[in-house]
Length: 381
Image: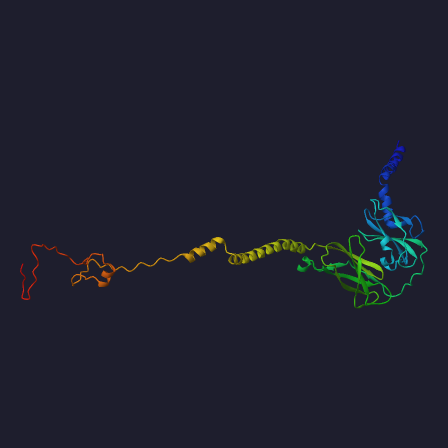
């Protein structure tokens, strides 16, 4: 019993390994592929223009967007010497890898703009930077040897690149966004590099970058390093996610994402324009109407106004009453009775003689006539 017990216990780890190992076949395979790096396979090594080939690959990142291109002046060892300018970009294809990092895509055969040797170039458009090449021959396309590699300086980016700067008020209203690409390069070659010319490209989404040349003035000795600052500018009104790429000697040295916000000031300007302009036009129109309306009424008066003017013109004003000649009741003249005017008597012959209203009259009796007074004194009755 004691001799059999150790043997049974020794079989337990083996049984557990056999039970657990089938549960992890895919991760182990993926790890091996990832360690070897991404690979590219072709259904044909040679085809003519107008045909097509099937491009496959493995070892790529999961759900990664790839670009497939036929490029000239390239080998798997040296890569694409002229960069993407040596590729048939118009006939390229895009493909997204699966969860296992594999892909398969049909690629039309097209002649690159430069002679062969040619390759099928596969590079990542999103995610971590990776690329791979497979030798391919375009039938009927000229073949020329690659240019000799020049001995001398060779630059390499030593630190991560960054974009310095910020948006201003004018950028919020659609001005071109601008940044400064800052990075540190080192000369890993055997000769000095004087006044290197870099290429800075800006790409929107999956589109090819637009390259601009930027020259840095200075000399980098072998084994030395330098801090480089290059300006980067987008078009006016640009917004969304961009990628800034740095290339030197036909090789991409670094990439930097750049998220550009939408210029909301332009949208606000158009909204205000749509609201203010109609209101201003309406107010101007009302002011013009207010100025024109009184002049129009004065030139063409209404019938009622004409009638009122005619009535005022034909009406004869009434004569003012004569001043009053009545005698005040408390005024009594010292003279005798008022004699009538002979002219007034002639003008009114039938009127009776009237005494002055202010002169008192005394009735006389016929039996007692008045006796005139004598100069000496008293009268007689």
